[in-house]
Image (cartoon, rainbow, N blue to C red; front, side, top):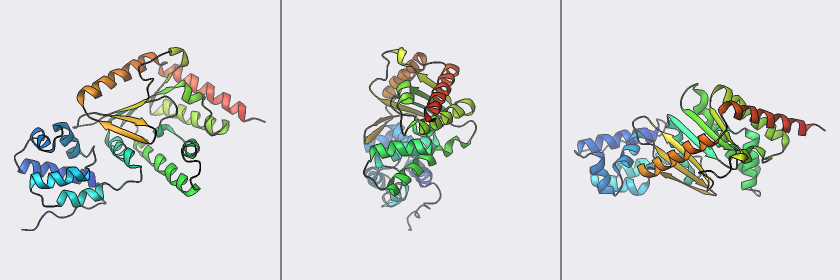
Length: 278
């Protein structure tokens, strides 16, 4: 009997792979929890694979082929789904971001990626890679800006960003770049996103140890993404996600209101614009 056909890489490989996984699991008479137990992962992890919110890694593909009697179907096709223009540690988070219904992001040192302009992103990447050729920097900038297509819809996903005042005052790329970057953030705050500034006078707060991103999905459990220098990690443990959701709620309570945040962002943009003048 012929095995399943390869998936078409042009047709959202992760979504198709997830649909095939759900079909194979149900055909085997297994629940998500039962299949997860055989792979030593949670049932919610299986649900995220099926929903396409998490990437199928090669080690899980091999185990799924064995457990579900799929020969090498998942092993072969997960290679197509794994192709990405983003660094390996970040690719899965970007894929999840694209299917999220709500994204809540806090960053202490820079403007979050979805809110960045091209020149601001270029300054960030050049600081990360001072000796990289211009072509590599251009590719990184293009990949970062491409993520913002999810904001083309006027309502989905909900984007809520809390930005530390330090990120707004750190002159990244110079006054001209900062003025443009903050005007872009202000424009998004007026028409598309909820933006709050965590001011210096808020003092100590719940996320002083680093950045975090919370993502909610339709039909799949939420995720939290931890970002650090040169690496990152997605976490789906319900207790961990709940803890960091509470952390985010504390941040929003300590931050300026959206109206006062917008006023501060526009004031700082004006200050940078004055600095541009000879």
